[in-house]
Image 1 (tube, rainbow, N blue to C red):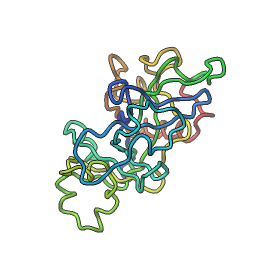
Image 2 (spheres, one colour; image 1 turned 30 degrees about the horizontal axis):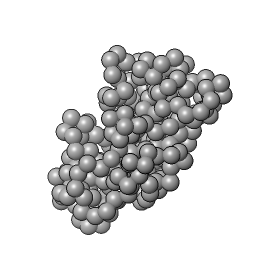
Image 3 (cartoon, one colour; image 1 turned 120 degrees about the horizontal axis):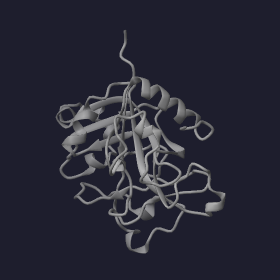
Length: 242
């Protein structure tokens, strides 16, 4: 019997620490993905916040700040591939075990922008945690494996933020298949009552209790949970998390 796909969801994107604000989620559930700042030296120039064609006013003091654009989605400004890298060993270990066909999901904390009276009933007030994208995994390689790849096999990672660093510091790199995507609508992990309160996608489907700062942790989904989660994501926003 063939192995059934599994999933990992990890936190990405701008937050109140870096660069001091979150990306927005709008009343209908659409959102904007905003990366964190690039804090390390790079071998070449990388995009700035001003290069990202964001639909809201970025603070003037960060417009020229380089960004750490990771994950990379082909449909996002300045991106070329579906790639993700990580330099933290705690996350790199589980991510390096992802197999073709598994899902690597990305979630971000987003701040509500707009008129609360017109907001979808699943949007958390003020801020919440939301799934914003998914890779259907093509391959995952460790940093050591990457160093041994041929130039052709490295090509899918050539625009990744960790590969652009000097030196390359990825402990793992993940390539997404062409079916990967940045979502159009954010999929809530928070309840509609409060951003810090997890909904059933966390408390019932993932391995996480939903207690404490769950929105900073890795969420793991087994094969059964992955099937249900994919059905919800594929049907969103007409499907339900209830």
